[in-house]
Image (cartoon, rainbow, N blue to C red; front, side):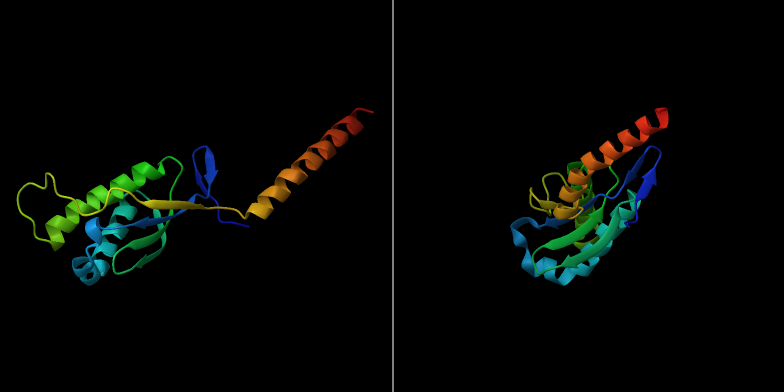
Length: 145
């Protein structure tokens, strides 16, 4: 069975495959600094208790498999990761001084897909749910006789 995580009133296993791209696909800068950018993203994930299950940096984009608690939306999480990492990349790696107003590192969009239970397993569970409920009802009425 899966390793479900818990919070006060919820058990969860929310995983997302995310792809983010630097603005203008900056291959020259990004290819050389991909490990440092990966470290920054790992550190930011730790701050929000987001599980970074797998990561891969290509020459011009990053793939991440994230495990996010349901209290955070995907849009909020990626906004946080892209925004804060852009600030740190400019300050630490690009040595930008002064205001960062109007500067960006990541492109505006992202690609995300859910990683969940197998569709066939879900279909089977839904199909068996009706049978399971009928069996439970029979068991309840048998006790009354």
